[in-house]
Length: 146
Image (cartoon, rainbow, N blue to C red; front, side, top):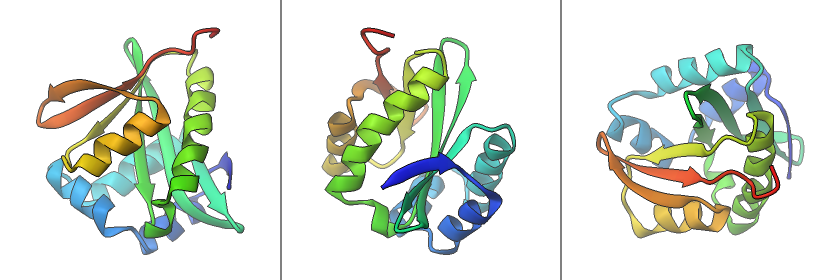
């Protein structure tokens, strides 16, 4: 797996085969796939979106936006993404994104509350910060040598 600057084609490919768990996440957040697509497109156009690519196929898009004292993330993925190896890759790559955002804490939210959700965020290095507006807020603290 590798990451590169996302293209409009990457975003379209990911949403063409968007995983059900991502659709469920968007609905739980009170949004639909179109709203998520538009949000990711805005970040892509601003140069803040990466495609996570496996075998030359984009399987996920991760975007970020600095907001106050943290960088908020936005995410979309195909079902192929949700495996241990890709999550381990994200552990390294999210630190790269954090560096691009000036070593701010990285915030990610989840509106789904299964035990697997918290587990994957912990594997990546996030700390559960509790509930905020119906979502669980996960924070990746700044890198120690940032």
